[in-house]
Image (cartoon, rainbow, N blue to C red; front, side, top):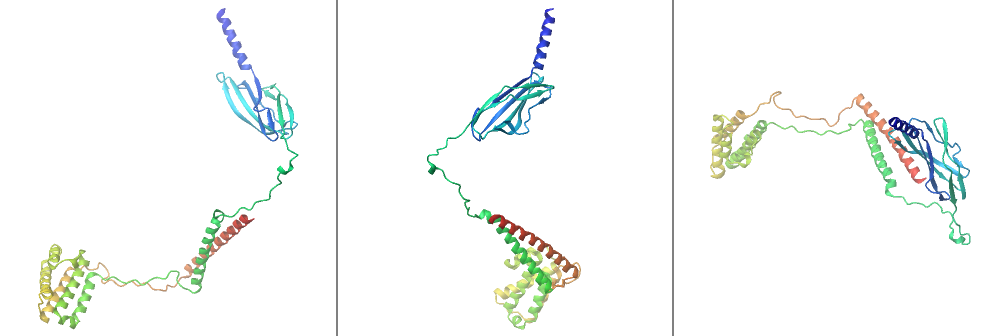
Length: 355
């Protein structure tokens, strides 16, 4: 019997807790000045499954003279193992008439029953105005003119710069189209001869120069300079800064014995003519010239296709097709539309800044 009694008491207490509904209202400030705000907190504790309906004020007046500025739910909490729920709603109020206001109980509907909170009181105070010293009151001020700064004009400045460049571009394209001139003037490119053709051209020029052939030292200096330049361009090492023996040693692994032997004899004669004042006969000079030509022919690199490379010359004036002209005109039209939009934006920004 005692156990049964405890069970009944527990069930009755749980039912009472579950069925209990509380409605509490409070003010965060009971005294405010005219125009200040206060907050009415309305807290409802009820069964977690019950439907809670807070009071609604369509006229936005809690009572005559007290306005409701805003209302919102600020907190929701579950209690007693999820059996109860606590909801707090905040009403922001204000008043512009000094008086002592009675705030009636706020009615909350929980399920099908209606519950009321306790009543509240709000005191609205006014400010003391010194009507005896009117000189302390200052009338309304006019609108002050704020000076312009770079930040105000920066966007307009850069948009204007872009607009100027776009208009210059349009003018240039229009003039070129009107005069039937190319948009970009192409330059004439010089052809680069292969090393063996360059060397043969220099040797032919030396062969026809009777004055240089008569001077042994100058003749062999010119001939060896041509060979050194050819070797440097052909094999990729700095032959101009190397001695004759160093060049021959470097070429030992790159050329055949016959052409290298002739090159040795040519360099030996040239060194004697330049440094030992050796005087040679014209027949010997021609023989050494032939040795140089044989060495170049034996070591030259032939072109894969097309034989001698022809100079690539790009004409300065290129006739523009009708299709190209149409594309350019379309591009000019697009740029003009962009210019018009940019000009409109600049004018609008200036108007908003000034007025």
